Image 1 (cartoon, one colour):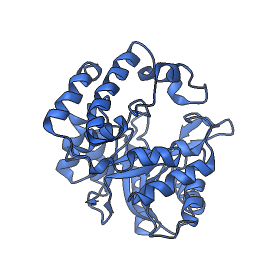
Image 2 (image 1 turned 90 degrees about the horizontal axis):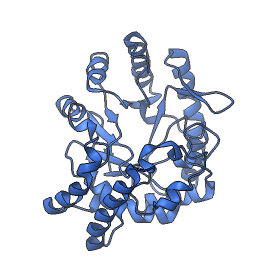
Image 3 (image 1 turned 60 degrees about the vertical axis):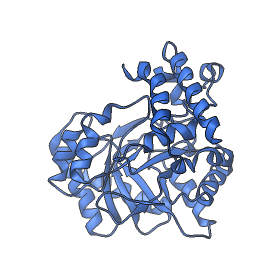
Image 4 (image 1 turned 120 degrees about the horizontal axis):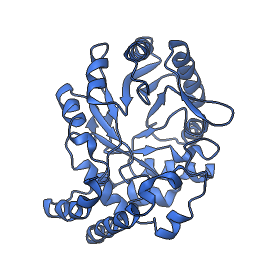
Length: 323
């Protein structure tokens, strides 16, 4: 079961493997320490369960995530999955992140990603964020550079991430957008109002990230775990993992758990299935840090929730989403 991603020829499974956490620690938005062998096992299990695409980024672990993905695929002897990665976020020696939209930087980033991933062409190359100062000239020049990289055969398709409807309209006049990667979960529904309708209108594929709200909706996150998140885990600074929101979110997880118990799946799988119930969403990016985590969520695309179950889930989410 695959779905066509926007105007591309990519036929993707409803769930893709997200390689953010496998980048490990040592940079500004890390998930804490991570064992590379666990990461490779997680990737292999996801592929065994039918996942056919991996989403990573140069900035994840400051290049380390891409290297781990390459290591995993080097010893994977079945059909190679699609590889999606991202650009414009650079880093300094201290692991602090900054944006660079200059053509020279983007071209260097592309070459570096090709080398780390050990591929000749990137299947989907995505602009990770729009300019923080909303500079349209900078954005236009960067998108023209990505379009040139596509024309040169360095990348097969180009997409964007974290863009507004207005930004999608702006860059679409320069070159077609294959896909958008926005955050989307029961707790983050803002894109339903303007962004998803714009994607539908333009025929842009949507691969949403954080369908389990960065691990919050997996069923494994407790008050104790949230309180004990180490300083090198970016989630320790996320308000959703703190009171007063944490209690409401844990209550939501219990609703997900009850629905999941009926289907023999995890709360996380139900959270992913809720995301995929939206017909404009082509696929959901799902992270896993070991084979066991992959086991619990990578087949969530097979779960079809009934209208009653969706209402049951959203009843608990109503308080959380009305923020």
